[in-house]
Length: 142
Image (cartoon, rainbow, N blue to C red; front, side, top):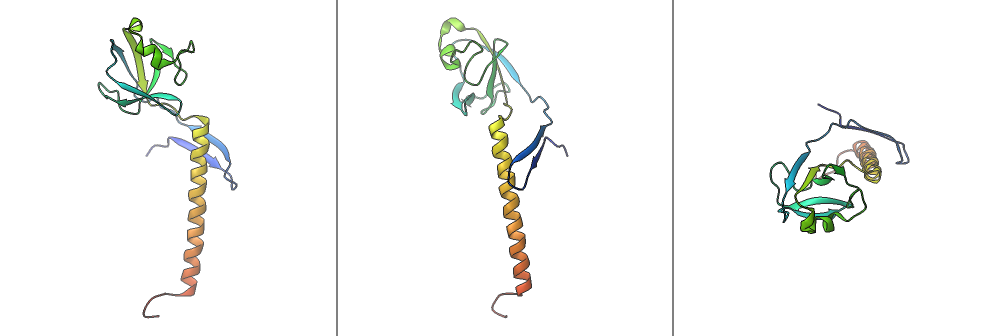
């Protein structure tokens, strides 16, 4: 079994330490001609494939680079909107790299908060079960 990430959360629910054992996931680079046969949509400030998976490009994969230059969310390195860039036939043929994006800092904090909530629920459930065991059995025969 592999360990992908380690999260250390304090009792108050704050994220103390987080480590990603980042193994580059499968990234697919493909050259496209106009018009683009994939449907791209903005999701969480990233441009992702919403329809039209093919050749290893899957729904949910994000645009990582265009023509070998990394993108910043939904913008090119020059600050242009990627959707507008891809609507212009003069920019084709275009090489786009797709892959699964890494979690942002905010997403890591939300994930750690979820772990904390699950731990609190587990602790409350354990104490409730201990109280029920001490009280005895409940039912028609008691």
